Length: 453
Image (tube, rainbow, N blue to C red; front, side):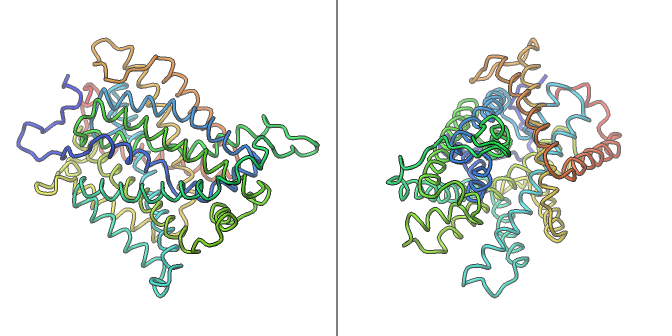
């Protein structure tokens, strides 16, 4: 069995990925994958479920999501390789079918996230005077070209762009807290909505929905682990960077939550089209109207950039380990990036952008991600129990990944049984499509079930 973290081809003369990411860059990369545009529009939805106790939903969901985050941090210190969940599940279960389902589910989530983000960027750019004469679709394509070229250019360029984008979106949230802090203490932070037919709030009725809604604000673990092979010191910086990113994210989310309900009653917040912008308008009316448009563009662009890097490294890692066509494992000799995978992703996302509304596809891939997280948590349990597996620099009690798997399954059931049935149906169709792809590729992958990858 090869040593974890030793890429195939590292000693064969083939170019490999460049190690150029330090600890603080890893922390900002992880934070950037969590601090998406969702917080800028999510507060109103959560307020309708949790009243003024939005902060409580974020705190509890951070605990739930943190279990999986800790598992990813431990796995990243054990096996610092591109491929992420696909590599981990193949090492644990040694089944190419499961590897395909896990790896391509993560890839699908990245594709839909980038495509949806590109459309949001196009719409927001058109709202700015400089770009008002261009169609949103044209602006979305220009944005996609910019991100694709950046990812192709190199991990160093992508990481520095991520640092800038993350600092801008984090600064926007810090600004919200700063201008609203003088209102702290003016609101009851435990005022819950009343259940239908009752005169008093019933927190337990709404708590699960609130946690499920905010749970997705912390997802980004797969983005972090997929660049482990490009860290200078992955055994230390991967787990430490991911834990620091989780801490930074929850502090910002809770600060913004308290600020929002302190400035605006939660009933009004729940009705606002752009809740965070409405909060700032009331707390600091002197702020230019276009400020949050610009911050939203940075936030969405950052998410797209990170998803693009993740998807390209995932396809590269799976191809290098024999799970996808070998061409996707090619690394550009000068840029040291998986340029074939980058080009394929660009083509897929262009098709998704042209296909129109992909909101249901995005919801379906969220369901698949929860199944992926369940599989990854369970994989850590298996690997901890298996003799001969190396220990990482960040080890956990076996109860952490076991409970993490249970939480993800509960979240999956809650999400799949709530509201529109189309998302679970699409998720099932995607799994069938992955199974079909596995049958097509199976002759080329003969024998890999017996290896650990």
